[in-house]
Length: 108
Image (cartoon, rainbow, N blue to C red; front, side, top):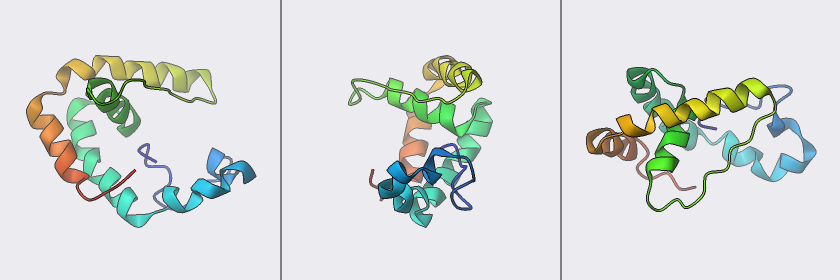
């Protein structure tokens, strides 16, 4: 969801089209969650990263997250995900506050 690819619905060929992901479709296309993700786009742009990299960096920085598990269907996605490690040290208190303010009221 944080990649932004579900803003306009479930794209063809994505995992969201799989029958086993039917239970998740409503969440992936939730307008409130997608709007919150869109609010993070300027922060990602400011840091020169993708929304997915920003989300992973936030998870890595968050002391309440004990494990970060990524998923990828192509080798390029693994490489992109690992670039989030370069973003972690740049997430200072001010950026984290801005991120959390943008997602206020959104539940997992």
